[in-house]
Amino acid sequence: MSRSYQEIGLRKEAISFLDKNAKKKPSLVCPDCGKVISEKIDYEVYDFEDVFYGDGATLRKYFLKDGKIAKEVIQAMPWSNGPIGFFCLEINNKLMFKWEDVEIEKFM
Image (cartoon, rainbow, N blue to C red; front, side):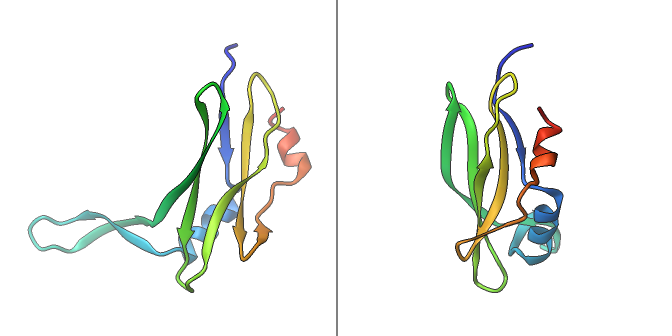
């Protein structure tokens, strides 16, 4: 088995929260009428953590509808044939949607 960085990312509850609360921008617009066909969550990359020989975690910040910013932060980086990245969200200096230790251990 080759060693590499594995990104697990955010918990599904965090992704659901972002889908409901983050600002979105058009991702597909009809070229004929200009109608927005689909949207995607608006974000900016704010950091890159090189954790394994040029590979690693790209961290994003999301702009919420209420004016706050939700930032992805690395919650845990255990090792199993390479580092495994688990993220949570930081909103107003509070960590939210954290992975439970038992959930992380399942990936080991």
